[in-house]
Amino acid sequence: MAALCAVLPGVTRKATLTRNLSSANVMLMAMGSGHSEERLISSRAGLNVAVGSTQSTNFASSSSIILSASNGRGSIWSGACAGSGNKPKICKVTITGNTLVT
Image (tube, rainbow, N blue to C red):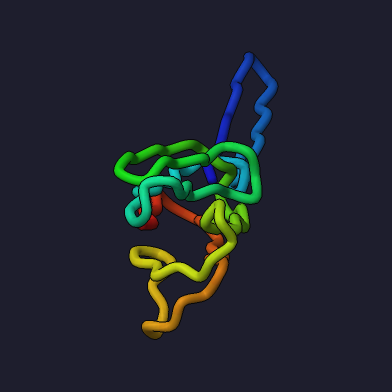
């Protein structure tokens, strides 16, 4: 939050400025590994990562993104989607800052 003040002879005006942080963009980076014919895809347009490569894109902060393997199989996730060792078919992550998923 910041204050803006304008002073003219005999007149003073003040206003408070706020920035809506939820509208800021943050980066989601995904690295794909596994079988060469698979891809890592996001539910929101932006990520379609071939195995052996890395891709990043910006989303609005607080976006919920669902990531999955293109073949529909379960995946072992790490980074923001790290789980308990099971192989879920999807990874759902809410990004509030720059995030890495593999």
